[in-house]
Length: 110
Ligand code: DGP
Image (cartoon, rainbow, N blue to C red; front, side, top):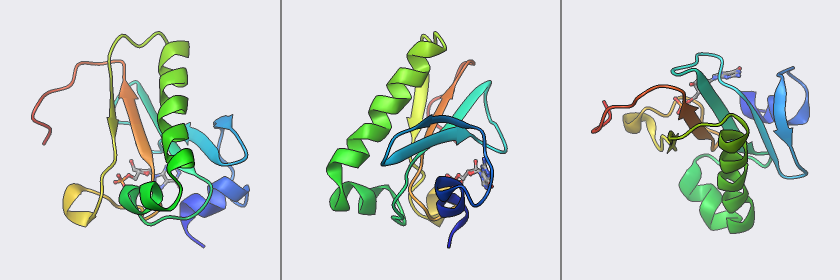
């Protein structure tokens, strides 16, 4: 079982910021911004593309949760990222939406 499946199922403790029957959100272990939340489907999909194809309703919920957390924190701008594939920086192969906020972000990203 992958690390995010263990967090989603409660086998590894994490402070959950949000939980529904299909999605959980928790703080990133290595935050890259004052807000750095990971929002994941509970079901295991290797990456965002796989998650979107398999369950578009749950995939859409990831964005709804990101919007809710950003609003709760009063973020006036934020970045949402799916690193998809190792060459794009994906290191955990369970689909996850990064919600980053609380500082300015450069474009293009590194
Ligand atoms: P990515 O590189 O896009 O696959 O992002 C994986 C993120 O997951 C990375 O920012 C660090 C975070 N992370 C890895 N292991 C854990 C963990 O056990 N707990 C938490 N909260 N975050 C983790």
